[in-house]
Length: 355
Image (cartoon, rainbow, N blue to C red; front, side, top):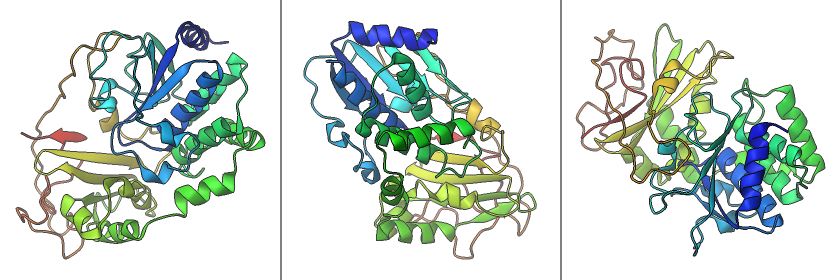
């Protein structure tokens, strides 16, 4: 057993109340891993709860145990397990009411800041669900069909339906074992990928109309504004698969998807690389690092780092997407970059907050 796995097991055994935490903009990996751990820890006779920053995606409401997310907790926890978060910023203000509890950090991102008293971080793993499965295997505990379903969902979604370059032999082998333990692959795939709302289809169509290309068509970008969300009737979470659509363009090297979170204040960028073994993009590794005391919850939230970089001059005719893109300054469709004025992502921060 790895030292980290043994240390986490000891911490859980010594605790009576354990809090699981998923990251904001939750996906199938963070929720699936956390819900699987809830099932296992509850089986050890411990009280366990799960917090997830709002909004919690409805697409994962089929997962066993989903109904416990963000339920009232009562007594504060003795231990906090953070699943699939590379840094504490990813938790938003989820833990703002707690102070001093030991944090355990279970993750697979290479950019992880090792913020826990114990850090089980495996960058070569396909997903946190894979890391969690191997840890539970080392613990020697039984993985129920409920936990198997949650872990399978985590691996499935973080490998993009077993399409991304992180679809390894290990990931496929674990997924097969989870099916043997009770996960239904057809049902999980249908609920995640074949159960889209009409609003999601409308949103995808609107976003596809914003596509632009650059760098001899090796870079593709698109954006989602709050105005487009309102027009489609969709929620922000319904845009989660759009970056993968962009990443499917033939000859592509880099895909960027800009999502307006707060008009004129905060825009998030999803980045995908079409080439394997790139770990997304160097901008991802530079983005949003936090200096916190190691291993314990900070007493106050940390401030985001921000920087402004100049945009380069446009190349005529190359940076414009669809003909009906909003004009710069259009109040109905404001966005922090103007089509035709510089390359988004290369000239701006990965996540930019403006005041």
